[in-house]
Image (cartoon, rainbow, N blue to C red; front, side, top):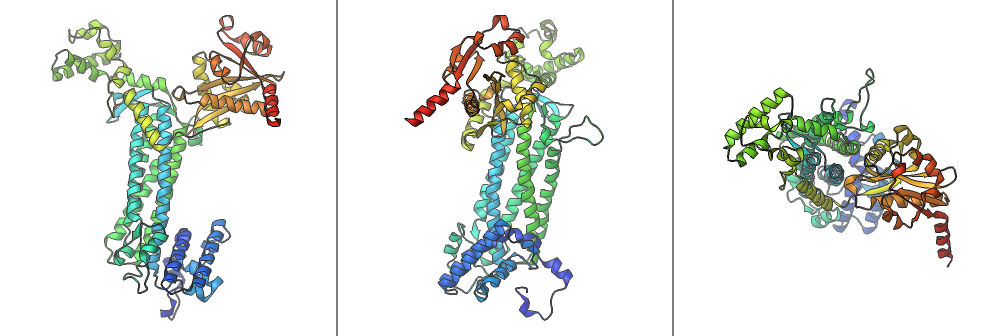
Length: 623
């Protein structure tokens, strides 16, 4: 039966009931309605409406109901109740009878739903702030891992000046920081309690609204009953914050879609966030990013819809306000999902640094530096600008970058150009010259990463056994350190076969280090392919990887583990002892005979007796 049925002789038509009922979507507020009802039961008990015994029975029944809903023992959506408030009251009445019918004393569904929605919105704001912080951390990790890499910056979608890729990452960190701050402000504004405002004019019962607000975690009660039941500004705050943040996410997606395109080829996106074509087998489509960009419009629609709904409403409550929820619920869900998906994308990005650098050089970005150079020689800026433009035109005709032109070619345009011009035309100079706060120089970029990392908390890392999905990151690390002759190269097929040997270290969801424990047929084991990304050096990640592999060695009851390295001190600190390579015939036969540096090897062999360590531990435990 409807809560308002006493006034009516006939029931609602089936069409009107389906049109009017809100339970199909406002069931989301069931826990908040129960929470608000517990608070209200205490308030009306204090006001003398309920006895202490009745209040305790109601509170326990509400707690039990909450637990059943949380565990999935009850499906709220299967009820024929009009709305979530009716459903909660009906469930209580079925259990407690007339005691439950007292709960609504002095309360209206108008102040009840306003309270429920604020409680729900407050919880979602906290979840969204956490998600925004996580994306910032992931971007900081990406920036930290790519501080050395330079790519073209763009204006008008044309190459303008070179920037560090890390600087690009930090631009979006700034945007997401502001998104989080908007939510913090919105939370403060919404954290006032409408309960006790009644339908529109307040309640005649002596409710202590300050205590009621405090019991529900609000900062204070709403001070005007008309405003309290009809205000949806807090929903607009969330939807505006969502729209702004989704705009940032859409721009972020658009940049990466372009960076990932065949025309730019600055980055490669992981298989986990891309899809293929049903017709063209060569395609690898950035579907995750395109969906983020597309979903932005849905969130905008929710904001526009509620603005239009609210603009003509007279005071106070009108049923039009029922239209506030579906758009809000969907917008929050889409926003949160897009933030999580953005994190997946960020963690999958691999920078094609050679292509980035080549593109940065091709854009004649050093033309501005050339003009500044001429200004430093006493040439008026406008004249210097014109000379630089002429040199760019000449270089274009020669199909050469400016820095590749001979000195005599440059001096055709100005005899003031001398040999000292060449250093200022280099990419690193162009970037690092902007070495002020907010610039793309290495120092300010590094300082901002450090500062924000500190503010957002230390990087979360985990050491774990490798998975096949880590293959790309492992291959990249192995190839890098092999190019530095710090370890031996491994083919992709070899890495696939050896994936169970590897452990990785993951920082904020991104693999930044790896190592393998290879077991020879004799039972001897080797720690090899140990490498940590260059921007993660000095953080203890290599030690953590070795510790992880040593635990594995002990669990496997291995006798000895060895390593060949140019950094013997690192392993000596872990208990390894220097050994003769001739005592490691398995290694010599498998890898050393194939190594191009076998006749000029400068690596040190170290070995540790795992069985001895296990025995020492056992003896220590006994004593």
